Length: 143
Image (cartoon, one colour):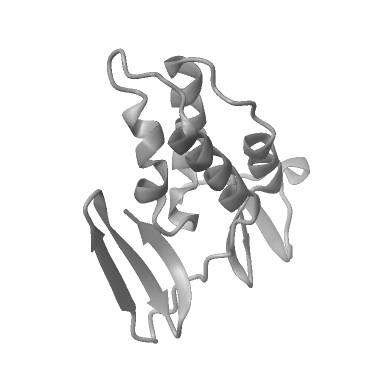
């Protein structure tokens, strides 16, 4: 016997949703934590590589919610190269686009292992992307 104990003040039972590692898990599926997405949408335009890497790090954590994440971020990744930080129209557009997508993040379906999975793939010059789905609802995106 392991003699496990619980502290009543640290426990919550019979909840309709649970916050876990920056996500909200409910019967509808998995969603990004709203305050984190709000923080991303309020970030100013990066002035240097360090700030840009910070922004990309925040968004990368939630990339599974964004179809074509790598393709959208490519102009920003180009700015992180040595002596490559020159903010231009493409970077501005990618930055605004990514912030907008993050603000409207969708809910990902929880997997149902009794139902078949579908994988959709797409390849472009700058990368490859895939979506794992069930019954037409996304479970995760990768690129």
